[in-house]
Length: 355
View 1 (spheres, one colour):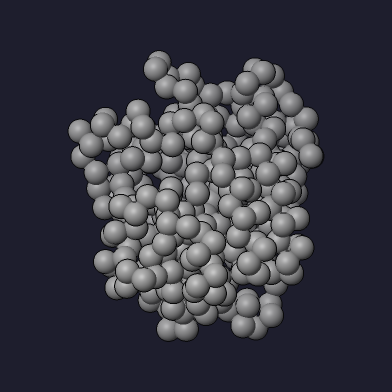
View 2: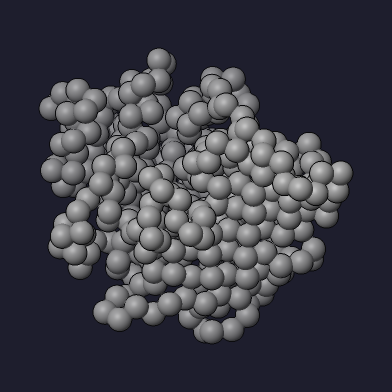
């Protein structure tokens, strides 16, 4: 599978390209960004020759003819880039969140349906062994029917780390913050748009596709910033309430030291509970027969379910449909919740689910 990486707005491009580089049946055939400096690290890391590095996406696609395009633009440009790239007849993997709005999400879905190619939305949290183990246990009926999902996630902030989780100093963060798209409202910045999609998309997965009836969201209003760094969303379902909280400014990054509150999920069923925290080696399960929480080692991820590149190539080679959080159908429900949350936060009221 020939793969091109187009638009390096989001530093996750480096992580996705590494997955492609390490896949035995994938080849990185091109890199493209309007700013050449942003591609230097990837070109060096993955030995991409100069004649495969482009600043024009059209030339990149025409000359390298990839099977798959990885897109990592700023959130507000997701629909724009999918519409640009889709006519070249490639499968598209776009980094989370799905889009800046439900209308944009629908533009993306229509653009890909017109080509017959596959669209996937990558949610890195969906690959964490703890959360995959939690979903397996839910599907096996370990806690009965899911009635609540509690989510808290984030990190110290989006500028504190680069691809491969390379850390950035406080001084560098202060220097970059005024200029970063992460902190621009027009670019789709803010912790709500960065992290709520994770929670509600995986929450929809845990809820087995159930959508809420209405949403209430509150965001902080940091002095001197256009966007939020903290949001709390309460979603009312026909089975009860679920809570989704996003945070830039956690005391520590969860991949180094779990902050308090811990990042991850607590899932409540009518016959038990599961706590599933990011990067932890166990999930904790309560049931009616074992009300004291038991620690269950997380499942060891195996191909093709270790990362999105593996999974997408597997689906394309076998003809299996894309399912779960990466599917546009499930991600669209997440986008409905995010859109409703944005309206609720702006208007400071409870809002019926849009779309």
